[in-house]
Image 1 (tube, rainbow, N blue to C red):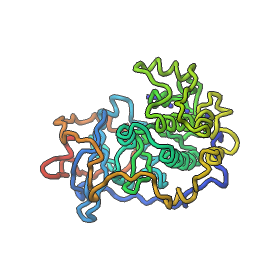
Image 2: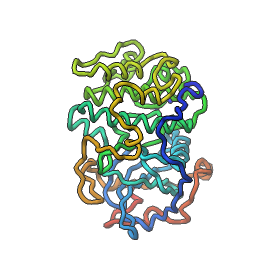
Image 3: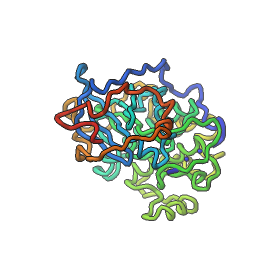
Image 4: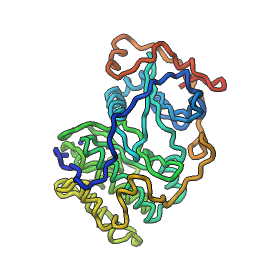
Length: 365
């Protein structure tokens, strides 16, 4: 895991499109109101399950995290940050978390269900994206990062696996495990090797600048089908990031090359997005000249690509996973339970095992 730029280097220009802000309403999450369905994804700390609200007949994604695993891998503060930030953030290009709850052994985060699947899956299927599609997704990222940076939140984990497509074809950022509120700089090492900015690798302290570097990497990968700095050995990836020059395929548009070069500028005082004007400088770049930013924010632009989605709970755009790990969770010690103090709502005695869907219990997560 890796993380950190200077204060106010990414302040938003007054002309930068921002969503209308309102106080975010948090629902009370009662696990017994939900029917567990398919697994959408698995990871070190637990899994994500499709769930259906029995009364509303509406589908959501339930992220179920094992506290013991979070403690073992020193991720408690990360999950606290994720819950805190997602509880206050509201943006069309960021996945919504309407509720969360915890019990003695697990944390449950309820998200809107985004049925189009990961951008990663579609990129691998198509090999690489056409320029108009890459530009559409990149513009969505610029809007989301401009909003987050205005709130002094850095994301630090941009990659195709953390981007989801809605049924209508719009992009949403998910997984805020490495996100952090930072007014100045931070020094924690976190992120995905191919997307790490030089200042992270060199432990110089970092901030909002790292998100713009990662945006340049993402644009390149969407256009080329592979990242600009790649190697099987992470150390070699770091060396390439620090010392290699970006080489572009011949089909890259000159305007696109220019933007990527300005995003992959090693000097953060010269990197676009970090200089005066902030995200609005990226918005005004000639590669984005065809983008109507306000219309994109309002989702009034027809996306260039529509994922194939069936009914409201269709999971065909996600991989299949076994529905139970069959693990027995040992009770946490009192001092371990205290690590999660301040996280928020307690489940009030509702155990995950009390939520059943066709005989599959959440306790199997």
